[in-house]
Amino acid sequence: MAKTRGNIGDLERSVMEALWAIPDGASLTVREVHAQLAEERDIAYTTVMTVMDRLARKELVHQERDGRAYRYRARGTRGEMTADLMRDTLEEFASHDRRTALAAFVSDASAEDVEALRAALAKLDGA
Image (cartoon, rainbow, N blue to C red; front, side, top):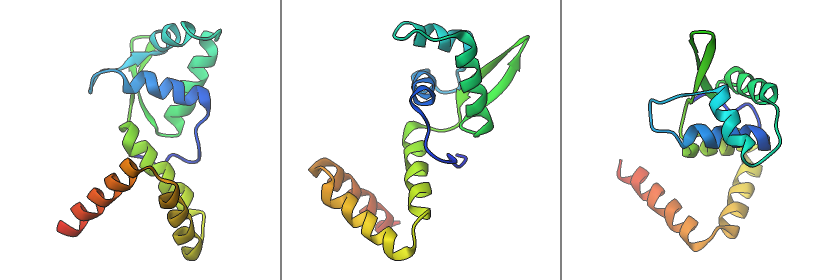
């Protein structure tokens, strides 16, 4: 998956949620995403179009021509994007600060999150 190039906004996240909700390999048009978002908020079609174009430029979505319209699908899973955001954030800090940030993250993590981290680390050690 491509770098996230910084955090994504609330509207970008809503668009990504719509794209993650469709089956693998499927794609949506701006009109289809707009229809979903318009159920919960007052939003212009052109706003959704601009956001989806911006997500394509950020390389978070794949954009392909379908007649006069474009179809969009997420380039990666929600988990991959979250991991990229975490890596991007950690890369902004010096090595010592990264260790401090990771320690702070783990100290505030839930028991389930700590167990998931342990399982992931064990998987890496076994690989």
